[in-house]
Image 1 (cartoon, rainbow, N blue to C red):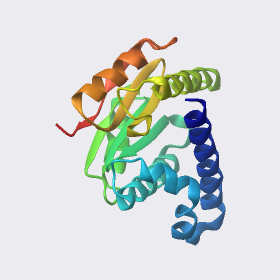
Image 2 (cartoon, one colour; image 1 turned 60 degrees about the horizontal axis):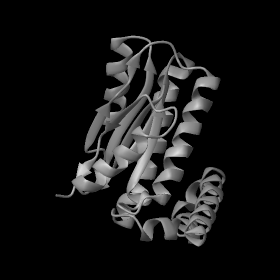
Image 3 (cartoon, rainbow, N blue to C red; image 1 turned 180 degrees about the vertical axis):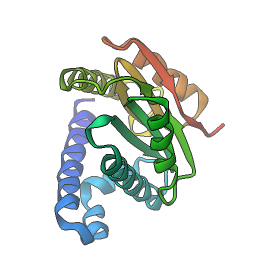
Length: 197
C-alpha cells in the first residue's frame, strides 16, 4: 500500500512539473505530454491518450476564454473528463452564468457542458483553500479504497460540495460517492459520472 501511494505521489509530482513545462514551452505540448509522469497517469486512465490530452486542452482553453471575458467578476473552475466539461464556482447573476456556459460549449471538442455554477459573489481565497483541503482528503481516501481505481475519478470541491466526474461502472461511482460523503468537511456530493454499464 505504501509503495502504491509513493508511486502515485511521484507520478503526480512529475505530472505537475510537466504541466509547468507546458505553460512555459508553448508549442512543445506533444513532447512534454509524453513525459513519464503523464504516461503513468494515462496508462491507468480509461480514456484514450488522445482524449486525455484533449481534456487538458479543453480545460486550458475554456478557463482562458472565461477569464478573458469576465476577469475577477466570477470564480469558475473548469474540469474536463472524456470531453464532458464541468463548470463549478460562482457567477454574479443568471445572465453571466448562461454566458459562461455558452463560452465553454463553444470550445472545440466539448461534447457536453455540465453547468453547476451557483449565483453569488466569488468565493474567498480562504474558502478555496478549505475546498482544496477537502479535495485532497477525498483523493487520499480514494487511494485506500479497493472497490475502484482512484485514477478513474476526478474530484472538484466548491463551498464544501464535492463533485465527482469520471468514466466509471455504477458500483464504482456509488463507492466513490460513499467515500467522499464520509470525508470531513464534505457537505454534499454531486455525481456527474459517465457510466460504462
